[in-house]
Length: 148
Image (tube, rainbow, N blue to C red; front, side, top):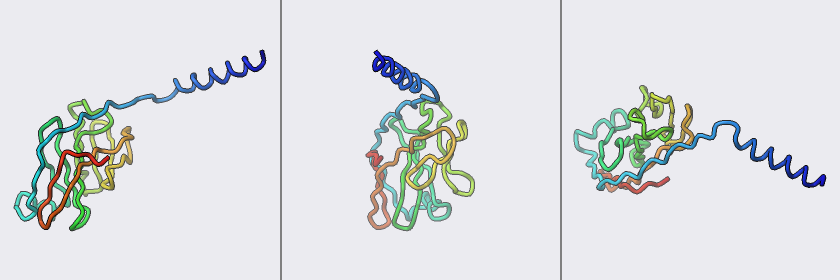
C-alpha cells in the first residue's frame, strides 16, 4: 500500500511538473523548394558580399529569402530568413543587424549568430535553417538542401 502511494505521488509530480512552465513548441518551417542559385562573385550585384559581408537573396518556394554571409574568402553560409520562433507570422523575417553583429527578427526580438545561425537572445531556441553552399573558384551554388 505504501509503495502504491509513493508511486502515485511520484507520478503526480512527474506529470504535474510537465504541465508547468513554457511548453511552447514552434511550428516547423516548411521546407523551401527552390532551384539551385548560381552566384558569380565577380558580378556587381554581389559586391555587397565584399563590402558588408552579406547579401539578401530572394527565392520562391515558401521561403522568405536567404541571407548569404561571408565568413572568409572561401567560407559562406546561407541562412533561411524565416524566424524559427513563429515562422507563420508575416513579420517573421530575419535581417542582418546594423553593424553586422548577427541576425535579428525585430517582431519577436530573436537574435541569431552568424556561426551556424544559433539563437543567442529572444524567445527563439531553434537555429535558423542553413542551406548547402558549394564554392568553385569565384562561383557559388546554393541548394535547397538543408544542412541542419
